[in-house]
Length: 429
Image (cartoon, rainbow, N blue to C red; front, side, top):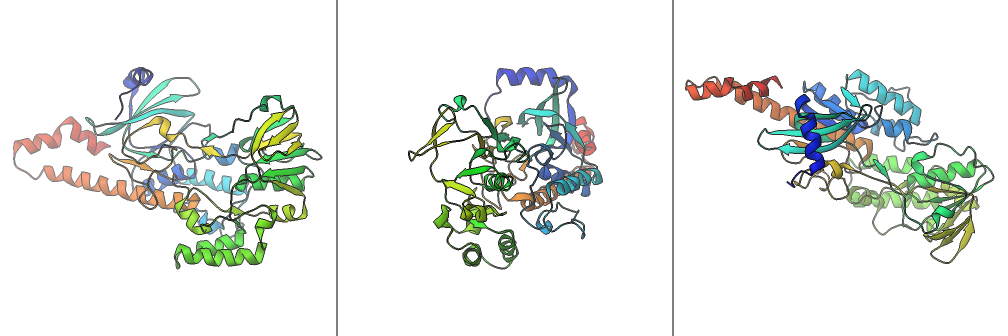
């Protein structure tokens, strides 16, 4: 473990007098954090969720565009112990899924502390507990929490990534990141450049084109384009076939649905789409109508990255120049978990995500866990939550049995151990 920085020590000392003890601290009140809290509750284990924003599910509430629908059917987008209603749409709109998450938090009485920014979490070996330092963003007050178990569930979309482009500060038009894009209102008739060809970039480009914007999109990387129907077939086959076989089925279906996408600048990688999903951070692009707009010429594909900007003119790496009225960066996000988690057990990598591959990604040492940190979507959050709650519950039963067993020994030493302050604290928590 590295030594605490001076600022961290000062905050810890200021908060030490009001330390709050919990059995489990969960950082992040998105789907992963809510699922972990609910699963623990179902097993009689208490938890407290610390959330930096002013609400649960802040990503879905504040940082997604209006037309968003879940790409998988509701079967794969439910959290533990709460399947979606039979009458719910097969592919839930953003608003419906948000209502589901709010109801989920209420149903399982998830305890949250909102507007709490975790600054540091480190394991105190002497006490056998995690010391979590946070700041109440409403008041600026430092807070200290202590817990046997710590669950990192802040997700992968914590901080937006915006590339530095020389001359971008001279661009007179609107520049924003996908996190701030809600709809195409105000873009009709304007020339808009979308930088980034993941699901957000492709869907925003479609939204703009439908609204009447002259739309261009930068697609430099290889990608797998699939339809919702094709990808749901892949998810169903996962229960029966190996990844390589699913890849063959998916690619055959995509050839029928899309034809040769490389003709329009969408080159497929050598690794299959399902294998890539399981072994890399890459996720297939689920087409919502963007490809038809590309084929018709309503969306122009640019295959070189941005080199520089001079006023309204954008120069690309291949020498092309085009003028735009607005630029939208759909260039992704990064996790910030490794900025506050002070642990060297290898659970979290340098990129803030799970360092270990599925399915060994979720459990670290000394009661440390991560949920939803291996890029497996909502279904992955479901699995992680169940595994974490099961493991903590098992440890709790084992610990309680051991403590109760101490009272059966006639020696005074064991009787004292069963009634000292430390042991009582363990039983009460």
